Length: 534
Image (cartoon, rainbow, N blue to C red; front, side, top):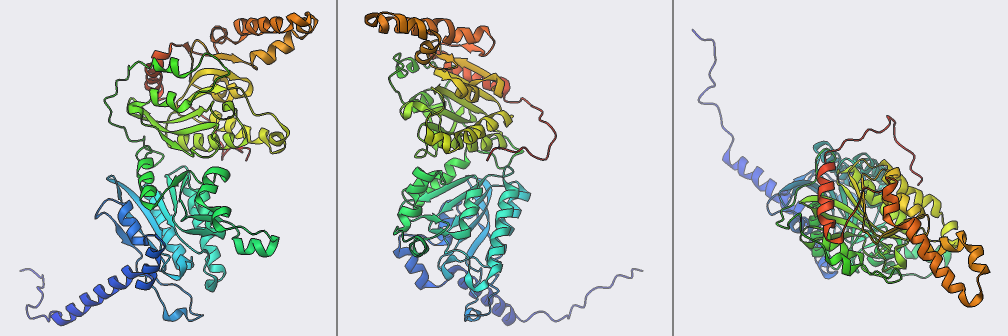
């Protein structure tokens, strides 16, 4: 006979009234959570043309996919009367959801709660979301709208920033991290976006600065507005702190969605494949007309990029900063690629301090997330001058050289018109690690341009020529240098380039090279990490 004891059938059940009370309590809590700092705060946010923290997540994420976490946390401050204002959630909404069906973790600061200021619990919520994103191999997206550290909580708020920075650093190169600046972002708060991979700012809404206008006025006497000091245009065009400039919040969310479509969820995955009917062997004969034969004439390298990539779809990154260099994402044969290209329209596409920094950071992101690199070259060299030399051009240029040498993803290079000096080494040489280097038949590859080289090599002959024939002799020597030293066939004979191609073959040749190298594996020395010249 079994010893199993059955529960008593007359056991008392929970009173339905108690259940209803508990359910009503839950509904009350949820109403309190959803209203944040209260309706007045929401109205003020809307009056500024800004969305609330929850409205932003509703527009960023796929419908009905957001799951909130840590909604019941309250701040630790018991002074200054804040004990009477617990504010469930402590001024930030965190959790996870999906964008175009792919999982992401998010945090969205709520300016209606104490100006979105960061306290200990506020920070813990963000850190929790960051850590879970890294552990689950999913992107982390943070929406910043905060007055900075919560003064009432003292150094605990500062320590909270430290924890956030640490998690940003641990996730760097492991998962994509994106920051949207949708309001003020000041003091210590600015360094988390600076560590993340990409920063999006909104016109007339976003501000980022270490020290605000009021403090600057007191300390230095300088009178500057928040917009002029750290607005969206300043950081997109001048400082290079931001990567994307949006007209409004809706456009900012669209930028993030498009960005994520090119990148994998983590560093162990390959980027998502695209869907295109653009033939891989489509001829690109228009490149011949796009690139002028006259080397003194400029052209828009973006048009060459559009001719090469699938469906003429190019997503440019940092389009307003260091415009002498173009970077961004596209696809070839449905493979996601990163493009680095000189821009002859702007200071002849020369490399300078800002362009070097811009390239280096982008190259390292692509390498970290298995995105092949395609470099389009038309560069006369590095920018000369005391301002560049004294500003550390050597150090900044070395960052780009280091980034290319360090990268193990496929690196394909097409010399469109010219590649001179150290710029050739960085952008197109096997020596630095480029896997497949091609050149158009009109390209020039040399230590320096023909004009400068002829004046050095044949200086005596040019100077000794009769004055009336000196220009004629100089032009003849320039042509001689081009024939003997800078034609791509010379480099080809030395094994420095792999192929000399016709313009109409460019897309097909890049696709073939990409498909042959997409699975390559490269060994690197066993080390803790390198020491990039920062």
